[in-house]
Length: 477
Image (cartoon, rainbow, N blue to C red):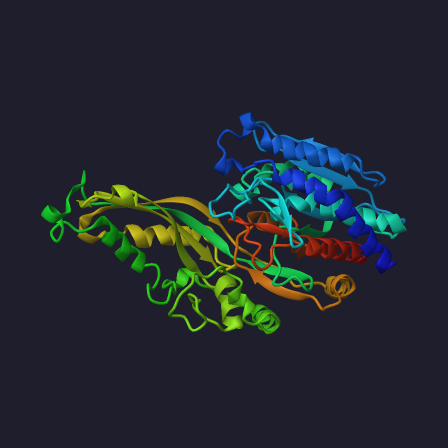
């Protein structure tokens, strides 16, 4: 393999083809079904799938077959199949995964920027979805094409690109079942929907946290009453909710109490966290947009810990509760002196990778609903439960390939790290292909702000990641 030629091919492809395509992709408000109840009528998901299909058809990859797959009223998927080259058999395959649906708009974008307004600035493409992870289908086929341009033998490659990932991939199991006979014997799963600790090396995701959540509602009155007349005698629904949340975590430290939400951290993951912490240092916590503060020693608000290893483990192997929404609270400008009848809070509880989400959800509901303070009407409505994922032991051939690819594409050693988010499809694929190896990686690095305002794709990193993936494929036997 001529590495210089490989990187040149990828670089030119990104500059002349992929980047313009992704600029157009950012413009399409292809929100995931959870955020667009009328996605069928709007047609945005269909459009991004059709655009990717149209582009893929023009690629100089011998034997490439493509299909837009639909099951009833489910969100559409794109499936591709590329035969092996160099005399390799087509039974053993590499399965690529990506998605084209997007998170909603979110407020707080810089002036002149926006979710559907692509802006290229300082080597970054700003806008919703390009990094998470609309680039995946384009990078995957470019990696394959880069090898074929040199005649490098590689395995058969198949890919599934869905449009429901940001809604929890609820349509994916049906497509996996339908397409299973066409996948072959999957030796390696390549998922391009994860993150990176910095933009200097190839990062491999080794674990993902699980997620449970729902809505906690506390009702103490049938209607609001004058706070001067009732407060002190009628307990506040918000205070009751606060007491219930104290059953889950410590308000001072944020530590989740119940052992049902905790798991032992494997020794290998501890070792990887130490190495990643040594690489990243203070960047582990400095990566976030802290509010200005005159009290913090660094002039801004501070994290729960400034130790990089503890920080990595806190966001990848520890449970954590977040309140992501509220109801029953009037806007400030219309908030009168009224004791409100009820408070509703949206709860999101991240779980360690090896905790069973369904059991944890049952425990969460039990803790919140038992023995309600003051006899209030308390109910917790579960809304989602997704278990996390802990990667299987990495095969020696893949470990060598990852290290060699990182040095070839980035000039630095590779690194491993857990991610704090939840990607349900990985658990689905792991269950379906228990003997497969996994290469889970992505371009979501520091400040890339997936799901939030000013989300961006780091263009240079995406190019080098594409080259690294290409360099790994020939190692699959």
